[in-house]
Structure formats: C-alpha cells, structure tokens
Image (cartoon, rainbow, N blue to C red; front, side, top):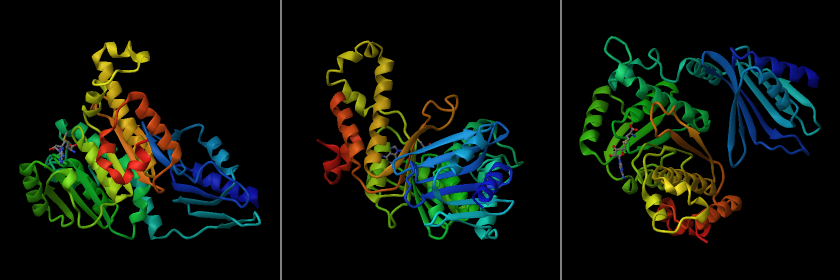
Length: 399
Ligand SMILES: C[S@@+](CC[C@H](N)C(=O)[O-])C[C@H]1O[C@@H](n2cnc3c(N)ncnc32)[C@H](O)[C@@H]1O
C-alpha cells in the first residue's frame, strides 16, 4: 500500500506537463522534519519545464529548480515523514494522509473549482504571468502595447521587470490566503504606476481576487494622470493618492505592501508601515540609498577592511549591502520569513535586488536579534529603519 501511494504521487509529480502543484506538509506522529512544508510546481526556464521545489520553515524558504535531478528530489521528499501530501494535476488530484497509526489513507478527490483555477494558473505560468494574449487590455491601457497588439520596443524591459515582480510575488504563496476574502494592496512610491496597474489587473482580472489597490506618490501631477486613466478604464477598486509614504493612513490595513525602487529611505518608510500593520506580504526592490553610508563615513571603519575602503565604489557597495542586510534582518526579527533575491538581470536595471517577506510568526526571534545587534555593534551604525520603528520595537533592536 505504502509503495502504491508513493508510486502514484511520484508519477503525478513527474508528469510535469500536467502537474499544477504538489504540497507536502505536517509531521507524522513521533517524527520531526526540518521543513513545515514543501511545494513542488512546474516552471518554464529557457523553454524547458523544470520542477521548482520550495522548502518552507518559519524563518526562511529555499527555492531550487531541477530538470534531470527532479526525480531523485521527489524520492527524497517521499522518504521524509510528511503527514499530508496533496498533488493537484490535470491528470487528477491525489490526497494522502498518514494516520496516527502510520496508515496511509489515499483518496483521489474530484477536481474542484479551485482545480480549474489552478489549471488556469498553470497555463498562465507556462506562458508568462502577463502575456500579450491574457493582458491585452492592461498593456494597451498603460501604453506598453501598441494599438495593433505589439509590445513597444522601448517598453520590453519594463514589461519584463513587471512580469518578474509579479512572478516573485506569486511565488511566495501568500496570495492563496485571499481566494475568499478581499486583498488590500498598497504600492508605495508608485511613480509612473506600471506596477500598480499591473498588480491590480493581475489580482483582479487574472487571479479573480477581490483586489483593492492603492498607489501612493508625492508627485501630484502623476497621481492626477493615473486617476484620469482609472476613470476611463472603470477599474473601480484601483485608487491613487498624493502623499508621503510615512503619512499614509489607510481605511483598511493593507495585506500587501509593495515598493519598487522607492527612493533612498522611502523604502524604509514603506517597510516600517508594513511592519507596523503586520501586513502578510511585504515586497520591495530597494533603490539607491545614502543614509547608512553617511553614518559609516562618520565613524572609524574596522581596520581589517582598510584595503576595501581605499576605493570609494567598494565603500558605497558595502553600504548598500549592509543597508539591505539590516532591512532583511529586521524583517526576520519581526516574524517575517524573508529572502533576498535577484529581481531582474543586471542588464535591465542595476537596482536588481528584491527583499520578499511573508509574515509567519510574532516578533522577537532571539537568533536574529543577536545577529542584528552584533552587526550593528561591529559597524557602529544604527539603521534608519530601526529609528523609524521607534519605541515599540526598541526591546528587540537596541541593546
Ligand atoms: C524611482 S521612482 C519608482 C517608481 C515606480 N515604483 C517604478 O518602479 O516604476 C520612485 C518614486 O517614489 C516616489 N517617492 C519617493 N519618496 C517618496 C515618499 N517619501 N513618499 C511617497 N513617494 C515617494 C517618487 O516621487 C518617485 O515617483
């Protein structure tokens, strides 16, 4: 029986053209696992369908794509004492639950409405998140596509950037929680708002969620233009407001906070807002930043780094790396499973880091607190985000 279910699960997962998603979760009685859950799904990379394995625990997730090695990775998972396995596939779903006595209960539930939706999601992923076929109204509305249906040459890289941003948001699996409740999103420092329009279209028209999206920027002329466009499109749950990120007081707390290349410390303003609200998902692609470099230039740098700092460019880059390390560590302390990933290839934009954070626990993980304090005391700086978070979070951040 055990071999039967393992063979069935293995077959369904390895039929990668048909696979939608497989989830391994929970521990069998009396055993322990390094991961809370593992999700396997197909992704197309350079024209070939790989299997993407995402391993989640409370603090982090690790994502790896496999082509030939996929079968042995599935076998590794099947050898672990997971309690539940759910495979969604165009060939039919398979549900396996291991009872307290270690017996495998296997069922093959009928594909539900959710199945049909995930099927769509699979098709979507196999093409791109937004494609000329599925997103024509959006692409035309924001001027990425010409009226005769071609992606404009000077918009190719913006289009790629938006798609990659959406793919990385989707990959966190945080959106799944909103299939039967409204999702509120704020895009801070929305600027030209390609991403704001895109995320609205993606959530509302493609994923069919009850999405409410607000773009915030200090540039009144831009916001006025976006409002006009929204009116002409009749996209009733997409809004724009003029204002400072730090001053934004939403009527409903945002579940998702986005900030794509918000300038300098505006990224910290966005992160501080998301942390205060306890938003489920916070995704930012930081921009140029100078605040920490200014602090670093006022204190003596660690002697061991003397030769690194002979060249100004290294000083600047270490400042950037430290700023983003502090941001990621603060998010981890605040109970966010956080990863830092390359967002788009360097030829599209030099600002190509993305910090992705999903709220999974409450604040105060002592491991991260200690790492954070050590890093601060080594460099003798205080990250701007810590200053913004203020007294409420002082017990975790300052020693
Ligand atoms: C580099 S643009 C990025 C725009 C857009 N997110 C994108 O990636 O295309 C940064 C935007 O952030 C806005 N911004 C900077 N600081 C801000 C703040 N404190 N509050 C609101 N908007 C801000 C700027 O006006 C600008 O439009």
